Length: 193
Image 1 (cartoon, rainbow, N blue to C red):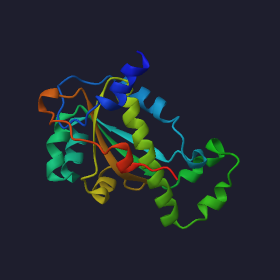
Image 2 (image 1 turned 180 degrees about the vertical axis):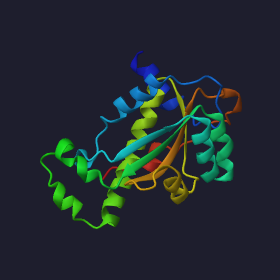
Image 3 (image 1 turned 60 degrees about the vertical axis):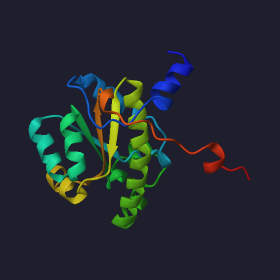
C-alpha cells in the first residue's frame, strides 16, 4: 500500500461506525492491534493502558447494561467492543518499562495524581489503538457514554484498572453511515507564532 492509500485508510476516508456487518474478527487481529498500539509514545514510557476485548454474549450484555441508551445498539452490533482502561498502579511496571524512573516515588504520589496521569495517557493510547485497528482493515466507533463506576464494578472489581473509553470494532456497515461532517480548515484550528 502506498502512502496515499494509507492516508485514506487511516484518516481521510476512515469513518466512525455505529453499526457493523456480522463478519467476526479473528483473535490474531486483536493481538496485533495491541502489538502495534503499544509502541506509540507515552510520557516516560509509562504505558498505563489496559485493554479488555469484550466478545462473549454474557460479557457483551454486562457492558450493554452499563452503557448509555444510545450506545447500546452500537455495542450489540459490533463483534468486539474494547473497554480501554488504565491501571492506576502502572508504577509497578516502571522497573521494566522505564528503569531510569523512580517507581517508589511514583507509588508515593496521591492516588488522585496517579489516576489523572494514567487516564490522560490512556486517552493518548486510545488514538494509537484506533489507528492500529484501521491499519489492520477494521472500522471503529469510539464512545464515552457509559457508566464508568458500573463498568469498573462489573469488570474490574478488586483491581487497579479503571475504565476510560469504549471502542467498537468490526467491519462497518457503510449503508448506515451519515454524510461525512466537515472539519475545520487549517487556519481555523492552527496558528504560527
